[in-house]
Image 1 (cartoon, rainbow, N blue to C red):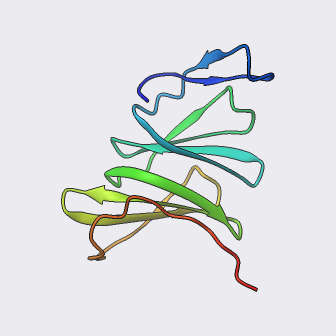
Image 2 (cartoon, rainbow, N blue to C red):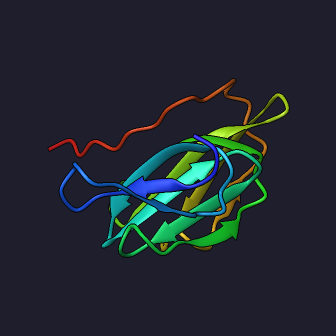
Image 3 (cartoon, rainbow, N blue to C red):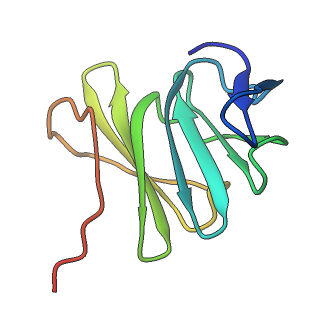
Length: 113
């Protein structure tokens, strides 16, 4: 989706909410906030799903994001290079570099007993 996202309190009536993130690829909720990742190296976060703050993780196109153990992890690519970014707050991102894992299109978190 490009442009504004939408939110609803009743799943019937919807309101646009501008996140300034370009194309939304995925959204996740963790640690009392929503995090969106998408194209153009942008991520956005919100504590209420209506007001968004955009950060630039400069990590190419991010296709997916997951949350677990207090960390947000986003995956994607920049050209032919694999991109993985990690954040503890959804705002400041650290890029893991020199990875040759091919294209990563999705990520999930699972806690194994």
